[in-house]
Every structure is written in structure tokens, then in C-alpha cells.
Length: 450
Ligand code: PFF
Image (cartoon, rainbow, N blue to C red; front, side, top):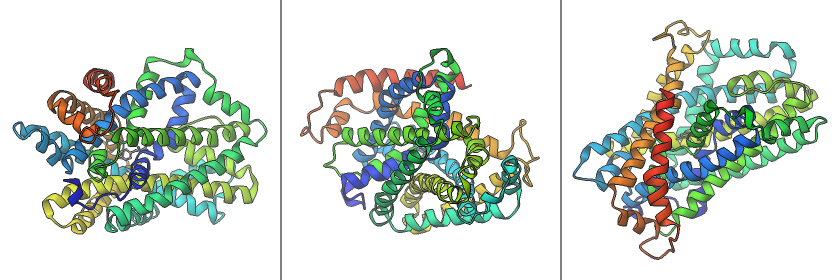
């Protein structure tokens, strides 16, 4: 059970670590863009509904499964349903998903480290506005630099995991999350004080229901799930470290609020500046590596170094705390079999670096870029599997297990800390959200995705 393990020492530490997992690249390079593209305020309202009703239901169910059993995903499913052991394979799908996301996260996080360095060293300031796309393409396709960056990033992640749950993950999250908040606020102030900033705010927040298509609804739902890091067992593992006395509902609420707040602040930090300098909005690598460097360069040499540096540091920090949670989930799973946490962590880091190197080489223009399966490179496959398929499948099976297989009394007992906390909302959460709404939403998302 959780107490016998080395878990988080406080509610604050637990919330910071889980929020660190949730707040990642997706908050910064995907959320604001999806909002703007699919109707600004209209998309935002829908996102809030999805993230608080469906995302948080999944988050809470994973935290309950983890804390109740004190185990990592496979064993957790087994402990809650020893008679039907096949459920444990849901945990396995989650762990595989974590491993694959970690590999692709390492590649992209490595890019952000490189861009941080190129910002503060003044290299980006000397690139001409029209040359950024070529600059990024040349970097991503080069055989050495992206690999060095991803290995450095993996090593940083590993060091934190080797520190342990309390002295590694919890301590680092308690420092990095406030740093992340300061960085995003600094960028918001700069962005909002630029002449013409209001156009960016209008893009983000002005409700335009005509842009809210069916495709948009699905993208917004997918983003709500990805953003809370649900559907891969990470939150089951973190749940197993949460103190027994914590109120899980409150923790889930705080994690969701922090994640949403940073996503909104990221939008305010990015789009007013993008519009103020006459650039067009974009998402993903295009936004981060092609559009934003032009924006930072328009702020002059010092602006490029300070604000470009702050932005890429923000990205790297957000990516690091997410990568930590992914490596921790797989490490803890491995340690249940290897009985040696450090060996498990090192082994998994090496393996995911191998997959990451292959993925990096498979990116456009790379040595393996031409190797395609079904028209897609390994990089594209990993992106697709970890983005569109595995997490919703795993989330659906998890919520079906939680709502229909785990005994209702067990869930109530865990959420009320053995009957000591009031749970007026329990019936609505369990009967409406967990049993029906969340599974239906996931089925719709999956069917539409296929
Ligand atoms: N929630 C992260 C993001 O929004 O970028 C992505 C992520 C991190 C998903 C960690 C899953 C995970 F375990």
C-alpha cells in the first residue's frame, strides 16, 4: 500500500508533480492554436466543459486506482480485480504508451534545448526573418546535434528520477513549477504591452461559433485528455504516491485548474506578440521554431536573447516535468519486476533514447526520413499512435473498469478517505460522469478518429 512506498511528502508536492506532468508542450504549442482556430471563446468554453467534466473524471479515476492499490498500472488493475486478470493488460497498454510518448518527447525536448541555447548565445538573433524554416529544417535533419540534445535531455530526466520520488520528482517540481509560472507571466507582460496586441487577444478569446466545426470539437476533446496526461497510467503511478490523508477530489481540481491556467497564459504570451509583429498564427513545431523566432527577433537583439531565451526555457521546463512523469511511470513499472529502481530507470532511459534516435532520424529530411511504412515515417507513426489512438483506447478501458468493474463502495471509500470526507457530489461523478458521459465521449472520439 501507498504508505510503505516512498511517496510524495505533502499535498502541495503531489499537486506540483502531477501539474508538472499535465503542463507540457501541449499547453504551449497546441492549446492556444486550437482555441484560436476553432472559434476563440466558443472553443474555450467547450474546452472548459471537456476538461472539467471528462478530463477530470479520468484524472480522478486514475488517482483513485493508484492510491487505492499503491501499485503501478498492471498490478493496480490486477489488485482491484484479481478474478479477471486480463484487465491488467490495460495497464500494459498504458505503460507502452508512456514509453512511446517519452521517446518522441525526448526528440522534441532536445530541439527546445538547442533553441534555448541558440537564443541566449545570440545565434538566432543573426538568422534572417525569412530563413527560420530552413534553419530549423537543417538542424532537425543534421545527424549529430539533435541526438546530442536529446541525450542531454534524457540524462537530465534520469538524474531527477534517480533522486527518488520525494527528493527527485517532488523537490524538482516544487521549484520548476513556480519558475514556469514566472516565465510565462514575464512573456505575457511583454506580449500584452506590444502595440497591436489586442488582435491576438481577439483571435484567442472572441467567440466565433461559425468556426466551431465537428473536427474542432474532436480536436478540443483530444486536447483536454492529452493535456491532463490521462489515458496512459501516469496518474495511476502518481496516485500511488499521494498521501492517504489527501482529498483526491481537491487534488484533481487543483491539477486541472493549474493546467488550464497555464494553457491560457501561454496563449496570452504567444498570440498578441504573433499578431503585433504581423505573423500568422500556427501551432506545433511551425509556431515554435519558425514563427516565434521571427517575433523575438523583431524585439531587437536584447529582446531576442531575453524573451526568446525565456520562451525556450519555458518550453524546456514544461517538457522536463512531463518527461519526468513518463519516465517515472515506466521506471516504477519496471522496478516492480526488476526490484531495482535505479537499474530500471537507467535501462528504460537507454531504450527510449534508442527509439528517440531512430525517431529523430526519421524526421523530415533525416537519414531515415525516406523510410516509410504505409506512407508515414517512424516519427509520424509514433506521433499518430501516441496522439490519436493509444491514449483514448487506454482511457476508455480504464474508465469502463473504474465505472463498471471496480465496486462502487471501494470508490466511495477511497474518495471519502474511509468516510471522513463529505462526498455530496459522489453520485453525480460516479453514476453520470464515470459510468456514462466519459465513456461515451471517448467512444465518439475514437470512432471519429478512425
Ligand atoms: N500533458 C502533456 C502536455 O500537455 O504536453 C503531455 C503528456 C505528458 C502526456 C505526460 C502524458 C504524460 F504522461
